[in-house]
Image (tube, rainbow, N blue to C red; front, top):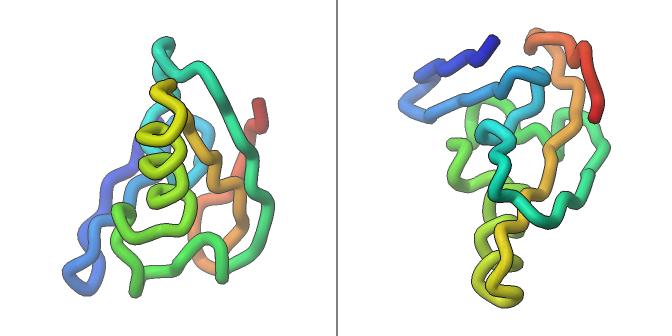
Amino acid sequence: MQKKILKFGNHIFYNQFSQRNREIAPSDSIFVAFFGDSVLNGGAQTDNDSLATSLLSEYWTEKTGKNVLALNITQARGEPTMLTVI
């Protein structure tokens, strides 16, 4: 189940795997998994577009010409628990 929230003016999005990422698409050809805590997650103060993993996904996609998704696999206090890792 997807979850979209607007908190403190920031867009917070969790995909169906409770990762703070956009949905995983069939067109994604490279996945890079980042594991971490609240620093990587960004918390409510960070808009999804400003997360390190979002910025890296965009940068690597531009540089490689392939759809790259940097997965934000984190556990932040007070946020949904990650139930599935692919």
